[in-house]
Length: 173
Image (cartoon, rainbow, N blue to C red; front, side, top):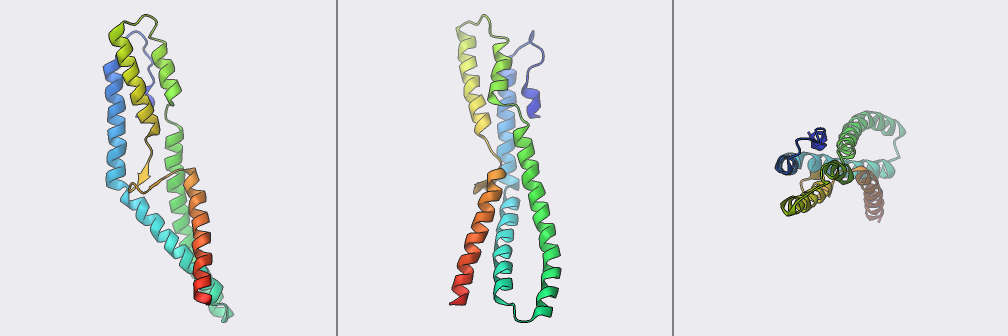
């Protein structure tokens, strides 16, 4: 839907139609974040807690080697599947965010049609620029707690390592 913002027909340019499309896209994104944002929040909270607890368990309980290897193989397959599903989710969200038209692309489409503008059209153009900026700053959120993008993966991994080390230190004392 976001690719439809790029204007192909320069003869019939309408500011109001473009403004309505931007407002519709922003409202759809907000409604998706509001309604479905709880699921990635719960997924990554569960993944965070199970990762920290599994790593801590494996680091502390190394006495019984046979039990250790059986536990790792059974738990690791399930855990890897959950991690792959969550990783595919993050990569799909990132793909859609990077393939939408940028503010510069949208402004270039408008500038092609703005050779002779009167005062009303200049005001509409300024208003559209504000909508473009709001459009470009809107992100997919997980329950309005964290933004889902590539940076999230690195932040998630670093926090898992930090909390696992802290949990190991607490349990060893």
